[in-house]
Length: 422
Ligand code: GDP
Ligand code: IMO
Ligand code: MG
Image 1 (spheres, helix red, strand yellow):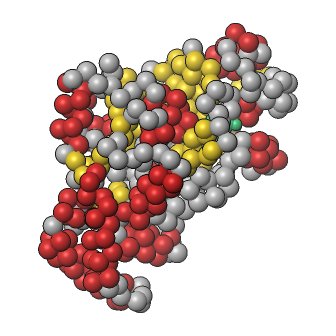
Image 2 (cartoon, helix red, strand yellow):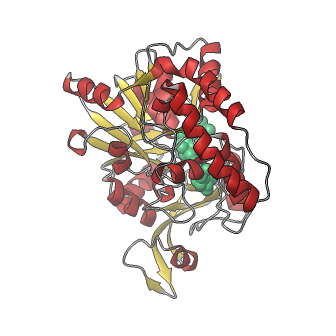
């Protein structure tokens, strides 16, 4: 049995939800290890579309147990909405969902501070879900955790201290209305009544399960280039989506991780601000957006689209230790005149020797492209690798060789059955 990490290899929205759903059938437990309701993981089951923000995509397989790890920041309102929605669709959550007592809570002031910050000079293009301010409080050691919900006196005291501080800031710096301690305490105590039953000592639960031979799939949110340490800082999220984050965000030690699978879109997209060397701001970009339905699953924002960036994927492979990759949305590249793949970055005509994460350098980068022919045929119903057109096979083998990983899945449509396994 195995412990596998699934990572987004680009800027998020690679199709992690779909691939985690496919793999979940083979694993006993699926764990989300970082991020919050900024994520939007889409799973299509027949005509039903599920967009999961906090609960692992494994919840749609009835025999899979789902865990939200300590690295996740939980907006109780979003969580309850998700639980209610899934239950209304007949999906059983009871005894299948476990939430770490050490996960931090997103508070109303986190969302407010996120939106205030986005209206200033340090705009990132966030999802507005309060993610950054919640992780700020976590690392400033002021955060309120799931475990704090268990004692109403502790909760009230912590909310009081935090709100006094935030009210000071809101009043003095932002000239904004103050927030009400009693109202927020009451609201969070109500959440506790429902969430209480799911609260668990997650590291013990997971490590015992692994010792008993159970298999675990760790589902990352966002993507490598949105990682706060390894991404295109400051245009990143505030957590570690990369594979190292799977250990800190779940309590599973590195010695127990068997493999890392990268989810890799056959082209590139990005939502929000920040450098994007292979971005297409022309008709080709619009075509990829329309054919690939590239609109944010959480915010509905149009995603910026561009060519596949093998230079970036090579970096992503290195940071995450990706050995195998699931290539998604290959169908979107059908019927193009030609397909470009970025194989190197240049600044002032000189090729870079290593991947830049300094944002000023990133802005200057010019992609060096190789051009490949497209396939002028619909591949969305193909079930076996051998039946793919030769140009599609050549494209896959080129990106796999340039990026340095093996391909284990090829996704040719959003449905479960539109998946080729190698
Ligand atoms: P995630 O955040 O990585 O889980 O990805 P999202 O769910 O935000 O975005 C991926 C989108 O692409 C969703 O709408 C999926 O239904 C869709 N999708 C996934 N795989 C494929 C594929 O192979 N082909 C096409 N056309 N759509 C896909
Ligand atoms: P999934 O899991 C794509 C982006 C935002 C913004 C930056 C910071 O569906 O792949 P934040 O709200 O996290 O402070 O925003 O990160 N971002 C995502 N982009 N997919 C996501 O999640 C994202 N989650 C955050 O657009 O640029
Ligand atoms: Mg998404």
